[in-house]
Length: 117
Image (cartoon, rainbow, N blue to C red; front, top):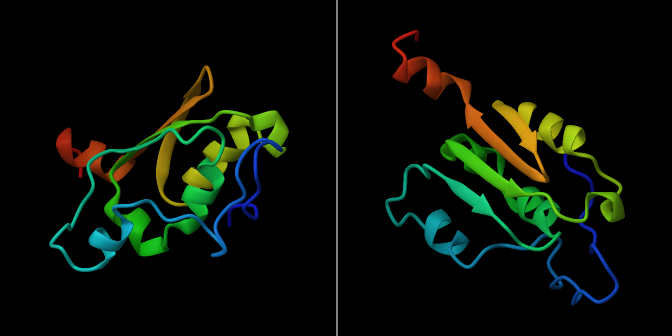
């Protein structure tokens, strides 16, 4: 389970009154608009990626095939690239981190594409 939502710095606006932030497209996606799969979820929210990840339901992660996450302000959040990779690995992703960017992909998809499934 991701850590509780936290602001990355004092100059950031406070999070909304709901426990976790939801992206603008979240209501459309969850509202049955026929979106069965997200091929790539790119998260670049200036240190608020923990709120985004925490706001996604387990079923949402099952529909997201690949994630590219800009992991800014890790030290201020008390996190490391390894801890974020471990969180995503627990949700079924293979991960790679480089220069504060985390790449995550579903191993089952890779195996299927390569004909190994």
